[in-house]
Image (cartoon, rainbow, N blue to C red; front, side, top):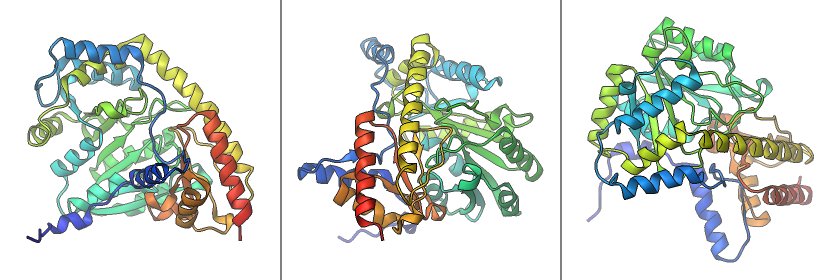
Length: 393
């Protein structure tokens, strides 16, 4: 039998980090040593107190179904955390727990966007944004993030993209892949635009705790935005819990009910013991201390990587203010970004991503995740530098 696939599958993309990771693992299986700068996953262990909370929860019976939106105590912990950090009131019934924050975006698109509607997304941006928008039959409109402004959005372009068909704006701050942030003025502009044109804002803030010399700004905190903002966040990055698969939404009340309905029809619920571990992660002082220690390490690594990249002839790199990514400009090396990424992997043993894995505006850039030890980062930088010096046109 030849399976006939639905046309929508042709509109679904992939995620370059996992594609390159698979290639790197294959090379490692063949005996080649690889420096992994491709995958956005902290190399830290999940803090002990969170692990112990998860084990205790399993031992105490949290291994069964939970309500679709999550255990109320866990939703209360999320609401309390968001209230403390973003300084805005949150009702726990507006919190929906999901097995990975990508579900927040997918469910919101399914609930609110019709085929042919327009959704504004950042370019370069997290690949799931364009992939999911295309998948549901909506039309992505790309707002450029520019290096010369620290990868802030081009606000004039953003405003020009709004048409009568525009229904949603997706923002990401701090950003993947650039490490850039949106300032208070940027967020205020997005909010003003949302009010003026009756737009829903999905705000991906998964890196909100990983900021350097900057105070994170969220549209959820802005006047009148509570009823038109969906906060998309989770525990993967800040608490080194990528494999625990727990994300969350804070949504307007009516939309939270639709997200609950979509959870019932898809995953049923997130794992109960993971939800109980989330209470510990979001409430315990030990967890907060662990995040602060991790941010200090990432800040040191950021400086090491950015300085090392800027010392390579033909490479320049802006200093990111958040996340754990560097997005160097490699146009003066004479390499095209995909060729450089491919050859760094196969010839130099360094796994990075081409900037165009994140959109057309990533042309001339590569992305590095500084989620490895200092020694590994130094080794990777040397191998990149040596390769470019030996092969530069």
